[in-house]
Image 1: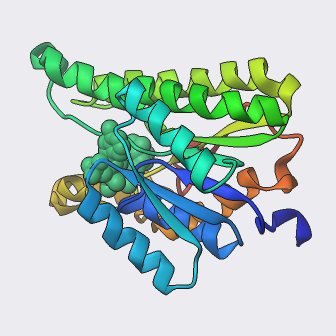
Image 2: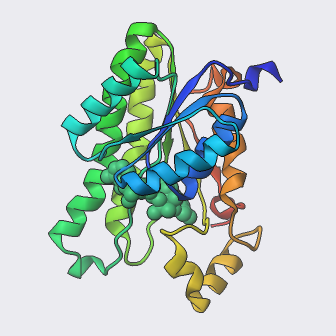
Length: 253
Ligand code: NDP
């Protein structure tokens, strides 16, 4: 099991004050990594940091907005100088906006693309500069079923997550020579703050369960195994791949 051990590594997980990011950070921490949590809301972030510290995980917090390039630069530099080299980056922060495409307003379009796609670019570029100098690194981009599929009312989200899939492949091609592996995880349906409105909608809930071969929503904990694999030396010859953790949906559709 040594290949999966993350002892001595530092992992930055964006958007980890709650939801999938928090659970992934906790999982990487339990596998031995020191973790740096991030979000825009300082109070929520401090609470999340305390929760992981109480578990005995070496945890830090870094408040920055991934859509603001200058904040990303300052935040990453501060982590590298004050905590240590970022060995693992998980680009997890993301948002959702729902409306029929013909009525989708420009402000929401920009928020979705800036957070889900430009934010991944800004953060990866800044972290990769240091990884390139060290000739080592792991980057995991959180994709979605919408990296592959369209769905009613969330076309800008699908455009952003399709973009993340191609950003993952492009980064894998450009940075392989620096010994950086870049992969994605594509979650199916997991109940978090983002998907609460869907889970509470009886009709949608029934549709999701019927559409998923596993016949249920996922538990964010079920994403942790893929994250540890992609963050560890067990995946040193794996790059440019997206692992879909989706209860079999993509195999069935
Ligand atoms: P949540 O809404 O529960 O959590 C999102 C996190 O991102 C929060 O910590 C939030 O904190 C942070 N965040 C949002 N915007 C920014 C920003 N600009 N800069 C820094 N942090 C930010 O979402 P989920 O846990 O459900 O989703 C996490 C990821 O997983 C997303 O990329 C999502 O697209 C993806 N995903 C989720 C699925 C699901 O079923 N839940 C399915 C497929 C993919 P704050 O607002 O305080 O900044």
